[in-house]
Image (cartoon, rainbow, N blue to C red; front, side):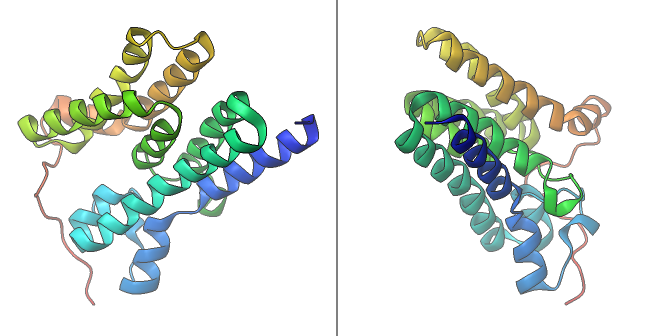
Length: 203
């Protein structure tokens, strides 16, 4: 695949990643700007706290699918290297969306979609790690951070190539960085737990 086509596809991956389903669904169907409620994060966890489980599940699935689809298409048309680069582009798009003034979500669902496409065995272990930590602590953010830290470690255990480990490490670092505010709240004992409600917008 030529350089120009590669660049075009990566730009497309970034643009697709930039589509904020949390923002779109909350505005379109609930007349709510999700960025103005709860944590202010346009992601499925904040949608869950503000609007409930149904829209949160839709947002999570849509964010996951955009990562899964772009990486799968990238692998089909340009091989493993394009898939790896597309993985980074789509997650960066989600986290720093061109449609939200280069702000966005924390990329966990999109990253998970990317990981399913690239490393399906690893995805299962990360799911187990994340769900276990959430179940024990009731902190979604802590489960996400734990899975992000585990990603490069599990890739090393499964002896993936260096390029894959590097991409996994970058994805993990991005995810932890995007949770910096959550880390501060966790350390201060002020982080919201799963099931803890926030004020819902007036319908």
